[in-house]
Length: 309
View 1 (cartoon, rainbow, N blue to C red):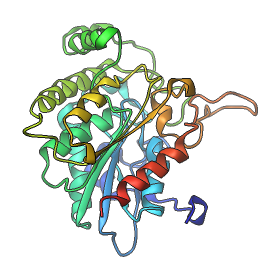
View 2 (view 1 turned 90 degrees about the vertical axis):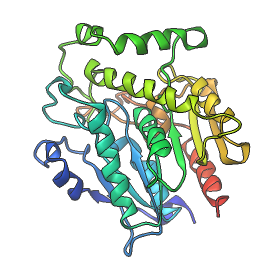
View 3 (view 1 turned 45 degrees about the vertical axis):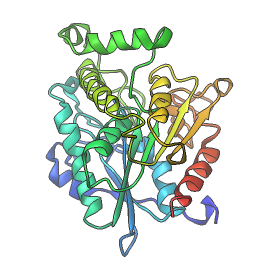
View 4 (view 1 turned 180 degrees about the vertical axis):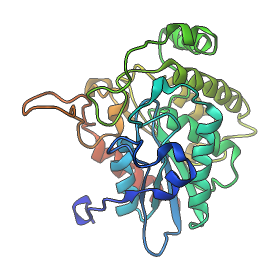
C-alpha cells in the first residue's frame, strides 16, 4: 500500500473550537485550524500531534495523514492558545497551563473513542507531548518527537541555549520583545518568535528537565519513543534526544537522525512539501523547505509502529 492509494483530507475540528472559543472560525487564519483525520467507525488507535511555537497544525498534516492512511490511526491536531489567529495581539496572555489544557482536551477526546492513545509533536509540541507522556495516564501509547525542544540549542554543550532558557524565564523576556506584527507572508505561521510564547516554552523546558532527571537505569522512561531530529537544527538541542535515549531501554527507542549535509532546518523536518509565501509568484523560493528524507522518515515510523504488535 503506497501513499498514493489514499488522499485523506480530514476536516476542521469543530468540537475543539467550541471548547476553546478563542478559535471560533472567524478568528483563525485559513489553513491554521485545528484538524482531525478520523475513521468511521473510530479506530482502535489514535494519536494527538501538537504543533510548535509560532506555527500551526498545518505543519503536522502530512505526518497525520500518514498515521491515518497508512497506519490506521485516528489523528487529532490541536491548535495551541495564541496561535493561528488573524489578530494575535502579540500573543499577550498566553500561558503554559492553557497549552497543557489544549493538549489534555485532545488526549481526552481521543481516549473517548480509541483504546490506545499516543502523543507527539513538533518542537514545543514535542516538549508538551513528552510532559503528557510522563504525567497523563490517559496516554497509553507511544511518544513521537519531531525536532523536540527539550532544550534550546546553542554553544558548546548547549551552554548558550541554557542561558537563553534562564533569561527567558525572567522579566527580560518582555523587555526584549519586538513590536513588529506577527502576521507576515507565511500563511501557516507567525513572522517572528514572540517573547511571551518563548517565555512559556522556557518554563516548559524547566519542567521537562525535572521530569527527565527522574528517569535512570532503575526507573527508565516508560514509553516507546520515536525521535526524529536534524543535525542541522539550530533551534532545539539534539543532545536532549541523546539524553532521553540513555534513559530509555534500547528496544523501546528509535532515532531517525538526518545528517548535517542534508541541511534540514528545525521546522522543515516535518514537511513533505515546501511552504510558499501567500503572495508568492512562480519561481519564488519557498519560505520553508521540505524534508528531502520525509518518505524515509515515514517508512521508519511505520516500521517502529508495526514492531509494537
